[in-house]
Length: 268
Image (cartoon, rainbow, N blue to C red):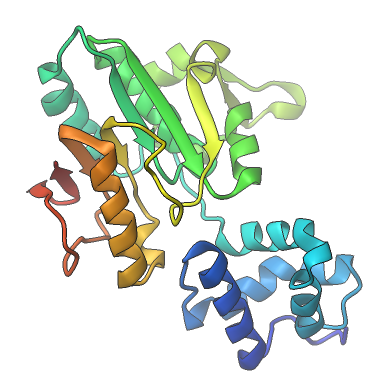
């Protein structure tokens, strides 16, 4: 590979765009070309590919599925942090949880959980405010971020919105080589179930939930794919259940039976 090729050509980038869309349903915008080049460059060098075009041919071969999985994860991973979009958690604590049935298990699905900050935030809030038995399941298509989530170790920068009382109750501060990090305590970690799931797949086997978080992921899908996902989510929510999307997202233009309660908060 030549020293100056640090990003794919526009023509080769379109091949990566199509690959990500076909495999995950995610649309990579044109302005993501530099990001893709930055994230894949080490892998291009690692397999000694002669540029991004050669690397694309490599990951497209059936014998190289492992490298394909690595590439897909690198191209689609996004950073997050604890208690992101605080208004959702405030609404949970003040409006939803005080009105639930204390004799029925309250089930939550974090449907694009990334590295785990969202579902752990949910679990902390439930443990403090939920009068009923509760469970949290969390899924992502990216297996490496799920492995990270199961460990529950986070750099302090990810915890800037984590309330002090939750940090004290549910986290352990890192020392020595882990200084600058914190880890979610096992008592909470062990209550969450993380699993790999592609939102393009059928959701019929997942069961019913009272609350579904699907935030900061719908923006990466086109309308056709978003409609398919929304159709599945509707089948997964109990009557009266809630759907939380990101405040930067909307269900406008999609067919659904949800009632808009507040910005980014819908009810089935």
